[in-house]
Image (cartoon, rainbow, N blue to C red; front, side):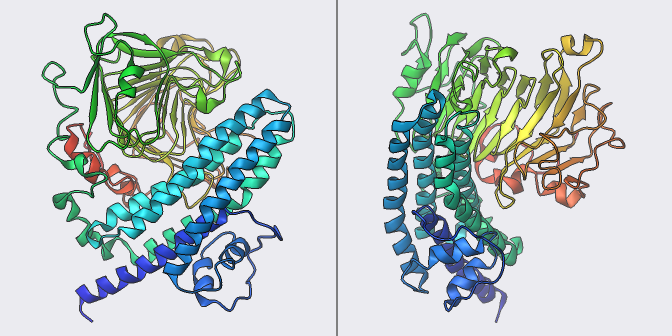
Length: 560
């Protein structure tokens, strides 16, 4: 068999396996009755197709039992059809069940968490549905895009489920435990899907489809993302605001088309396939901005991060869930921002208080500032790219489970409250197969003057493991003297210390000496080849959607 036929055959086999792999996650969101035992022992089955699908998963018993509901078929197309038709009904039933829980909820915070869960779980379902659509519209020439989207969206589905669970933190009644029990199987089977997809991709290897997928850079993406590489978007963020022709202008003095940013956002079309550019004139905008799901391709351009500022003060202490505290929250895909400041002024006494939450796939932020204290930037989910941005804070001030790459950014630790230690990052990867990571490349990790002048100087660390498989990479960066010699801090006890993935590569500065770093199993030494795999071209497919925008962008290792 020649190389061309072999490649086609292997990719064809991968399509079948990938199609079947998604089934388990969708069926897994159905109501589930029976044993909760998910041991890894072998499970008797007469269906070889099911055995093949389940062999790479962490939760084999749940995998087999979920697929057993599919009428014992081994036809991937039929399995997809059964799964798709049954999943929506069952998930909606589970969501509706949260209304019953709300009627008996005694804790006001738990009641709010149930409302939030409805939104989050609907989004989790949406990520599963668009994964199916991607499978139905498969194109060999777009293999790289296909794999990137599938892994990002399935990770997103899992992240939204976990965010629902997080909403019940510190609640006092049993509502949270009951809701978490309802979500248990869905999380397990979404994890199983990620394991299946990763195994298939590893088997094929990048060499099997790089040749075809590279052609999409010349051909362009599909209709859903086509404008990302079109002339309409090229150099958009490099344009002079004075010559820009925006769709809307926001000015507090009435000289624009709108006086508030939210009024301009409401004018953006749903499922927009073209950039909707909002030029925001200088001023301090005291409002909470929410760019909803499906309001895609919104572009916010200010006149500078110090003179165009959006500010708010929602916070956890005042009864607001962390997810809801964001001054600006972005859920529409294809979001872009340049020359804007995002701020939460609640202060360190108010605990979690987000300045910017990004739940947008293929999001780009250039020359922006995110200022706050605890939980300043919530890089919640999907693929994100930050260039020449400034992020300030005290505790976990860059956190989330997005696949987020920061290049040439400045992370500034602020003076904390007495007896507090500061954490730059708190990455939230719960599943070892998921795509989430915080990658700081060519950045400057330092502290403000007030912090540096404090005697004795407070302790600060590169990060701590918020979730069991927390993943953070610091490479080619300057690490200042404010970072403690240990480098990394525990979350609580020994949680995540063996399962996290923390690595430092080719850094410099007084805080970059790794000789006294903690020696957890999760601290990894990284080779140049491994470090290169976390650069934006490879980790978030940046050549496809970042390269032509005019934003400064290094696809691989940076020349410093």
